[in-house]
Image (cartoon, rainbow, N blue to C red):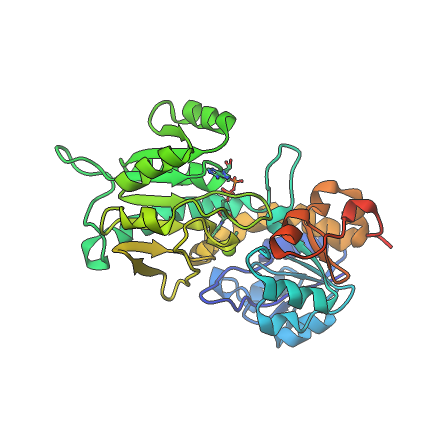
Length: 372
Ligand SMILES: NC(=O)C1=CN([C@@H]2O[C@H](COP(=O)(O)OP(=O)(O)OC[C@H]3O[C@@H](n4cnc5c(N)ncnc54)[C@H](O)[C@@H]3O)[C@@H](O)[C@H]2O)C=CC1
Ligand SMILES: CC(=O)C(=O)O
Ligand SMILES: [Mg+2]
């Protein structure tokens, strides 16, 4: 198959869909790879590095979109990209459609077959193509919180770890999955007092074991959430119901009672955010203030550490991308986990939670017909 890699165009997005190492794997299996000029510059991979890996270089995104049978990207397509897809073409990237009806409509109208990284599953109930970026964003969330808490940035002026004789900051992590676990680990490593809330008791048990008492865990009732959030210096929003819009767990009323200069990092913003007052921001202007509380709501946090992120993402996407390039739609028919990633096919929404969030009718991909 001819696999196309356009340059990412979202604000401050420096990642790339395929690294040169990944290109080499595709080429070794007989695929042709077409990379837009400059697509890898954010990770120190120039056109020559891609040519050395066996790729051809396209002078424009339009050339990539018009020639490729499959497009491999990182971020959800932007409006200027929706219009370039065509029926039968495969798109393999993050989509986050639940909070984004305009993009959903654009993809449906294009006729593209869109496989979303964030809903591909594995045999252990995990999300293998979301996990690496959740690891990055979880770790980064604590760097963002630590920076925003500094007085010149509008924060409370508290050091996460404190110093001998002065108490550390209180960090509250809502959702103890991949993002939450990595956030807790970084915050605890810096010496903060960390509490993780989750609705899954088995998950709280795992975290309790893992952190051996260094991190507190609490079952996430409204009571527990309120008391923790009101005492917090930093709150990390890290919940997920796969495919669905994030539940709003911190209300405007709760926010009004928080400490002035506290920081809220809503990592779940790509699914619409889990704080009532969240709206998506960009790396160019990452924070805003509501009721004296700093909000950081960047929807592509890993783009800031593109070098680390692109390699981690490619390690996870490579086997699935190779299956799609090698078998086309048959890969979706064969592998139920990859099929869970299918969000849009032939103008219909093919993921149940995404369809429900958008109020669209659901076309069940398990009911057959994919490989036709
Ligand atoms: N902003 C960004 O740049 C990035 C955002 N993300 C997003 O971060 C979010 C979290 O991702 P992961 O940690 O990988 O998901 P995950 O599935 O590993 O963890 C989610 C956790 O939330 C818990 N949860 C669900 N509903 C809850 C509720 N009402 N109260 C408390 N806990 C609840 C679940 O039990 C689970 O443990 C996702 O929306 C993901 O897309 C991930 C990477 C980058
Ligand atoms: C998961 C996601 O949205 C990102 O890495 O940007
Ligand atoms: Mg995102």
